[in-house]
Image (cartoon, rainbow, N blue to C red; front, side, top):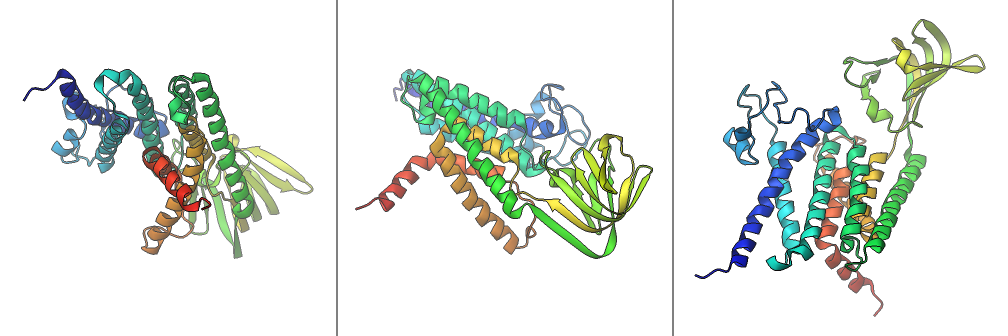
Length: 385
């Protein structure tokens, strides 16, 4: 059978698209592990075992194959390696290939479709890294959200088609990308603020006073707040600088100062205690002892964090304002259905904290692959006849 060189190159591109994705997935695993722990993604340059910290040689770090060959265990210490590493590599490879197939054109015209594929590969990588960090740590780092938004603006300048602008109209693409990012930022920020007004506080009232304290069992980890039989992480309470916990105290000890029958406000970086008609303020950096007995506690609560807002800003920068609106709707439906099902089958508790970033990422991916078809179907069903 006579095959032209273009046919052969096209066949090779199909294989390369998947394996490039799997290789990028291996790097994303490094990002997912190191970024929330403030570890440089470049130093050490090689991946290392999270248990024994031994660096992994290149032949034991082949995407997909190494995890299977080692049966999900470290070759040095035999500690289990999370299946998340294999899944991220596989997912990235599949999504890279799906993007490649979506925009594939003839090999001679690779200059026409290649840039769009490259930009969307970056976009997909940011969605995957942000989602898995959010699942594990309930945060979306600024390096992904703000850095991704900057990358989205540059991508729209280079490839205006990403945001629905005609090819070649680069500055209009940049302007629409910026406007779409602003819509994503402003729209979800409004949802956060309205949610905070409607559901922004959770009150605990105790018939008898209970012990309350702020402790830091591990100096390398954020503090925790304990009261009654409950322990809450710092990030679960304080999502931004304006959040504060309101406390009604029978007694309160702040370092050497003791207060009785008072109220206090615990902020992210300070505590303010009512002393007579005034408040005394103590920076938490200098507080080594903070405990007491309380009768009431009001905890700030939000439907989502600002990281989700910035994540949607990034999505808007890459894919335009229609994607922003679709993503909000799709993520809300997906989040509601999955959260309801998981709670009904006992996999999570009512009121438990749920990361919203993965649902935003899923909504953006649905738009990326099926958005036009879904929009056309919806318009055909709702249009006046």
